[in-house]
Amino acid sequence: MARATALGLAAIVLWSTTVAVFRSLAEQLGVFSAGALAYIAAGAIGCGALAARGRLAPLLRESNPRYLLACGLLMTAHTLLLFSAIGFAETRVHVIVATVANYLWPALTLLFSVLLLGFGARRAGLALGTIAGVSGVVLAICSDAAGFRWELVTGSSATTALIAAGGAVCWALYSVAGRRWGSGSGDGAMAVFLLAAGLVLLVARFLHGEHSQVTGRVLLEAGYMIVFPTLLAYVWWDIAARRGNLALIAAASYLTPLLSVGVTWLYLDVPIASMQWVGAGLVVAGAAASKLSVRTGSA
Figure 1: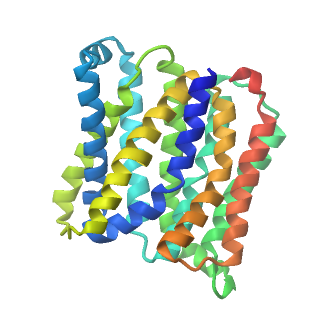
Figure 2 (figure 1 turned 90 degrees about the vertical axis):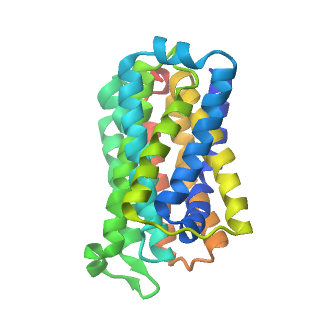
C-alpha cells in the first residue's frame, strides 16, 4: 500500500502542471487536437508496453467488466469536460477559474467515498468542507482586477467553472469506481482508458474542424504532456486509487489548486486577482475539512 500511495502523491505533483501546459498547447494546436495528441500517444505507448509483455489481452479478458466500462466512460467524460473548460475558456484569466473548479475533485472523492464506499465520516465536517470548496469556486468566478462582483456569476467564467466542475465530479467518481470494482485487478487498464479517450477527442477534433500550427515549442510541450501529466500521472493515480490509501492521497491533493494556480500564473503570465488566491485557498480548506471528517481507517 505504501508504494501505491507514493505513486499517487507523485501523480498529484505532475498534474499541477497540466492546466498551464495544456492551455498553451491548445492555443497552438486547438483544444481537441492537443488532447487527442497527448492521450493517443500516451495510451498507445502504454498499450504497446502491455502487449510486449503479453499482458494486454489478459487484462481485457480478466478485468471486471464493470470496472472497464464505468471507469472508461468516466475517464472519457472527465477528459472532454476538463479540456473543454481549459481550452475554450474565453481568456487566460478564466483558465484560473477552471483550475479552481477542477480541484473540487479531492473533496468530492472523499464525499463519494463516504456515500458510495461506506467510509465513516462526521457529517458536519464533510458538509463544511463541501460548502467551503464550492464557496471558493464562486469567489474565483466573481473576482477580477476590479474586485468581487456578483454579476460575474452569470458570465462566461461561470460557464467555464461549471464545465470544469463537471469534470471534477467525473474524476472523483472514477476514483471511487476504480476502488470498488478494480481493486486487485486491472493493472495497466489506464493505458486503455487513455487511448479510448484520445480517440474520442480525435473524432471531436475532426467534427470541430480545428486548424493546428506545429512549432518547436509545440513539440516540446506535446512531449511533456504525453509522458508526464498524462501517461505517468494517470497510471500512477490509477494504481494508488485501487491499492493505496485513498483517503490520504485524496487529501494530499488538496494542496494542488494552489500549486496549479502558481504554475499557471508563471507559465502563462496570467494576472491573478487576490480574491482568486483566496478562492483557491478555500478549496484547499474544504478538502482539508473533508479529510479530517473521514476516518482514514476506512481507506
